[in-house]
Length: 241
Length: 241
DNA sequence: CGATCGATTGATTTTTGTCAAAGACGGTGG
DNA sequence: CCACCGTCTTTGACAAAAATCAATCGATCG
Image 1 (spheres, rainbow over the protein chains, first blue to last red):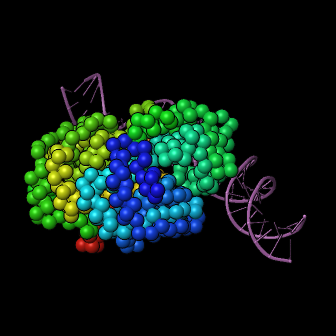
Image 2: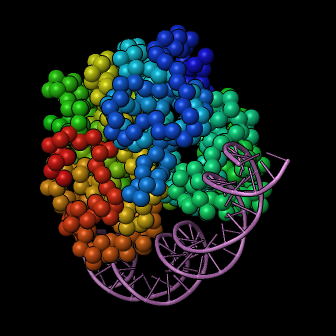
Image 3: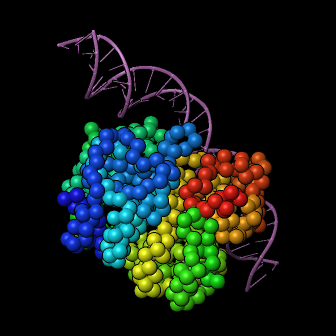
């Protein structure tokens, strides 16, 4: 099912099967995007939103020299484009990282979904989750050193992947280059390489061949001052990570 | 009028006088908060939201040692608490910086406002503006050096203050300590002091006795790679800054 | 008037970035 | 099959940016 993972494992926003059916019915098209492909460009007028079904996408802002800061990472279940419904266009770019399958939902269909007050609240909720994650990313960049940032990011991604069934709680596939991680954590890719080595040497976690394994979850979380509250996970999901 | 500044100067979201009246009618209480006072604590269940009428507030996340990272600064016209309507509680703290006047709107009234589809979209829009600002703050922390961060922040705040009539385009009151600025920009307050001196010495801008004066707007914007697109200002407002 | 808070400055250390180069790995085409 | 190529990873040496430590100064407040 296309919308299986949308809001999955999130507290107070579980979709009823009727709501899920409404969303499924609103999908106009399924699309596959190759890896590393621009999907939405900043400023481009948008008349549709997209739900990630499979793969990974990211939002980013370019600096003057073409270097980019990733401001969000999107997994299956994320309704990436939803803000464009109310904003009309986005101020940042969205691109695929891996090969990605997305479900397109035209804005006029979203308007219809929104007419259902409870479903409307849940769509709003989904965009607020993104904002909450943005705030914690700000904390990460503003208050943590490089190793803390990486530790925090890996804990977060593990928790999110677990919520949608893509992590067993300690191990998950993450097909990003060290440079991608660097663009997320606001460090150079060379420094990212050093940090990953340190994490490995200290036995906290490993990141090899696109696969993350968290060896000491408590220590890693402590190193990154990670606290999952902001993910608004439901109790069952929160307990298991 | 209480809601005068809400969404003022923002593209595609100007309130009609009827919508404004609806919001005014939803206000249950006007409150004054002393400077430097906690207003909402992370995790606290909320049944009301608040609109800043006068003064300045901030959102922040504490680290392990009690140091904080500011993740948003709120001016008059900002509906600070709106996310709590859909989320139920917040994952960060909100506190006043200066003495602040706020208008309280109970959540059940927001539910009523939301029943008006167009007004509902504008409330959603307001929370998406915050998210857009979060993303640009991420860019600031992740990609700019300390001076760039300060330059960017001052340009942003000038533009926002101008949009609500609190800056003449170059000068505005900003009653923050250097430590507050440091908590926004993710540097130490000592370093912030040095950066402000450099900005002064280079003739880009001055920050003295709670008052910012931008001397060379173009150069300051260039130094901070500031581009106001993400503020979704309407054309008249954007032209003037 | 002493006390407190914020601003300021200098000296030093730590962290991270920059530059340069080499190694690993997978895919392609001869 | 293998040589070549590009991309990603890894490492070392050095430079730059920012943090830390230690004081002093100035204004405000009870």
